[in-house]
Image (cartoon, rainbow, N blue to C red):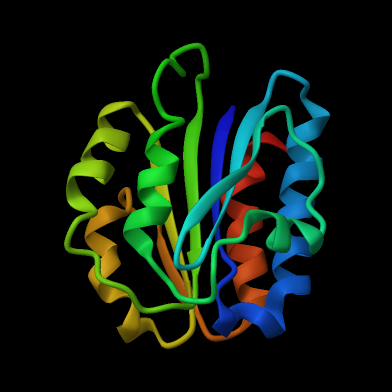
Length: 168
């Protein structure tokens, strides 16, 4: 499996950084069981940066400072960063993207990027943490039955773990 985790570390997520990284590390730990699994972890705010590329390692809160992505929210830059890692992944039977955010940002430029990801056979999972109406504009970019929202972070954790449950 090849996975791309795109995680919102904007200022509005600050109170959930520890929960977010615990969730990500649970997913990463299970991915690390199969040494053939590879992935990318992207942190985003105003900017986006891949902090893991290839072999997994666990995240630390220090990765947020290392990434230097700012406190705002820019979905386009997050997906643009992810696009760099979707080519030449045909050796992987399962390819997925998990995009997790609590923010609001324009989605007007996402269609070409998401179309490309779909063409490369990536399943695009979009998970919104907060009021569902703020994320509805993102539904069009998710794969079928891969759009989720909740105002409860424990539910978000369950949703994200279920996205990866097939290989545990």
